[in-house]
Length: 245
Image (cartoon, rainbow, N blue to C red; front, side, top):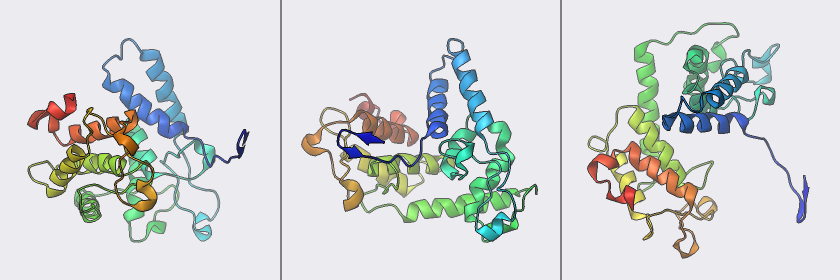
């Protein structure tokens, strides 16, 4: 792509990622009667976008991972599964759960190549519990001293903290029984600006240290991420004042 300031490259589009989040947001508005056709079209797109088969041929010898049951970042033709895209789309399309669970769990398996094409793998409850416990331990161990998490995708510590809080809460952790959640809440509350919003500089990414936007300028997206993290933690019940500021 050529623009006024030179040539640019876009690695991939993000239709499935965006659609999964957009549908979740629309469903959360409790307006299904008014926007039914829109939800139906989005749902059909996600259903058709799920990868139905593993790579062709002897994909294991080519060091390819299983694909069946996954969602990619863009569309099935992209051909590379993404575990977080799969998790977010699965929230909207839970009927495809079995193959999707294999995709989500497989990076944690000791030998994922043992999962062959067209093989139905059943996971026992205690096995699932072990996966969850290992994931919780990983999230808690990589938490930063200030209570935040470094993100490998969005900018940066606010984004990582939002997802980490959501993951911990989904496993049954709460503000009362989890030190990591209490530290994360403290980080988010301490980084809130006087106008009630949040804003983080891209400099946080290369510096690997939380850096607020210059001039403490609030950013709409960062504010939304911080609010969702606090809501996950139960802030609305403990003290809703920071949420309304």
